[in-house]
Length: 130
Image 1: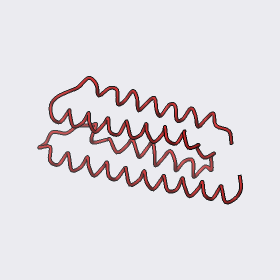
Image 2: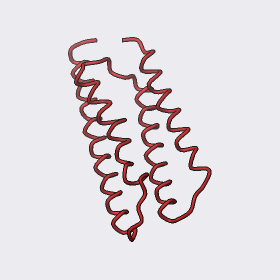
Image 3: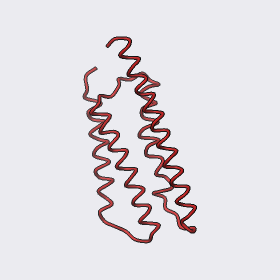
């Protein structure tokens, strides 16, 4: 890989870290506002939903950047993004239902599919050549 390719990949990962940091702040803000207007009822799903993009996105890609590890391929990154998105939305939906006072047995599929996406993305990252 040429020096310009390494620079471009590093800038791309820096952009991902910044993007996930913004997503983390938006999720934390959403959780704070939703908890404020929930009349004293709160849900740990919404309270800690910001941790998924923080740990799965910001910290994950920052570690790749900091330790100068190999850059994940496009498909591996996509599965990582889909997994983080699915788990975050699943936490939000589950928390909203919990605050509303109801449940839905189909919410478990958010966590199953999101976990599968993360496992597939990390598996593809480990198997890639570079």
